[in-house]
Length: 192
Picture 1 (cartoon, rainbow, N blue to C red):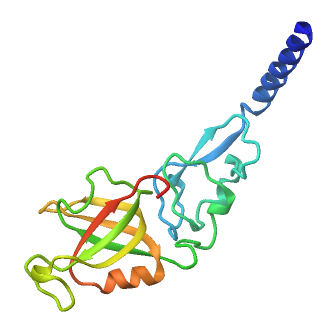
Picture 2 (picture 1 turned 45 degrees about the horizontal axis):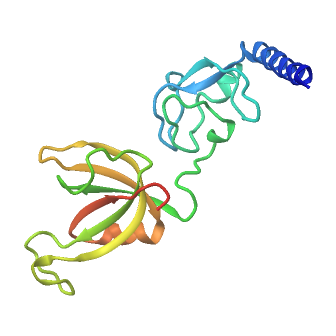
Picture 3 (picture 1 turned 135 degrees about the horizontal axis):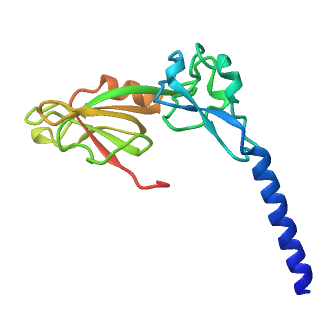
């Protein structure tokens, strides 16, 4: 029984080593710097990397570089990621039924370590000291609430605020864009 187990283990290791050697010289394209959806991919945006055993992935091989350079990024491309053929072509971003919106978030109105991909609740309240019809006294209380995902965070401005690009449902994006007041972002935990 032990000899059979050792034979199976030896066979697996042998096939694994053969497979690694067979794929070790394969070169594919990777993203050298972030490329937003809809932007034309330049030669400087991609680089060649070696990847062992890319089984099942539709990676773009390095010798097909001319099929990528000069074409449009269908989705945002993150630096360091491997280029997949479906990421190149007509823009598919934002997805159907979703919209992108940029909001100015004041100092202390969003988590400091917030980054792309974070799920958030967007809360728009009346500006400090401004009393709006339909809100509680002194402008307290939420006037609008929506759920979205952070796409990017632009550095802080002179007063400590930042511009945050969000992906959310079209109707929510329109409501946030037309709302007046202060924007606050509440970062949700994974799976919420």
